[in-house]
Image (cartoon, rainbow over all chains, first blue to last red; front, side, top):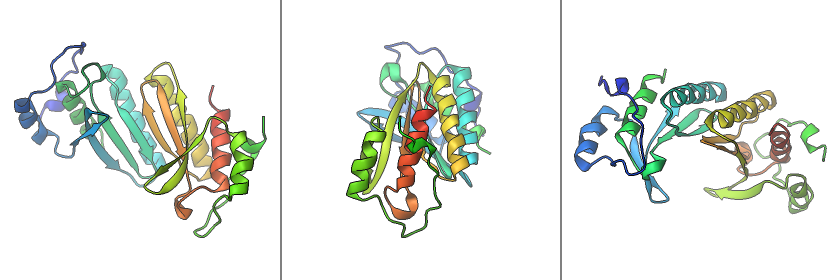
Length: 112
Length: 112
């Protein structure tokens, strides 16, 4: 288990650097359940988390919402019957910052 | 204001009838904020609700979740910073049932 989830989500400004190819190669193995998808030309980290029903899915959405509020960094959360799709990216830079990998790792940790 | 939101979401079986063109024409004016979108060949009622921040959006997601649980009929809820996109359709019939219009009207009613 990596300690990526222990990382802090740093304040991200417009113009902050996106993750480099080298960082991607380093970080990807630490969050193996996630894939990079591109939406409207912007890359996001995305993972589908599965649950038994709607209530369990919504409870997870709320847990992810709580860590998002704590970090001041917010994902897109698609809640459906039996599944939550979580997407992290950094609006201000139009792509992936190291913060997004940190938040992905934190999300994995609260999936029970 | 219509009383569509007062309707009950009836138990829907496989093979239940989709809304007819006549019913669509009757129901659409009762939920003017909604549009019909097609995802993977299945029609859904969709509306984007706007909020000031993430917390307000997530609170609305939970209110919609509560009426969904009460009705035993579940939407897809995309929660983002400042917005929730709500989609209603009936999985068992692969499209739109009158129930979905009832739930859309109920959703409008709890948007404050």
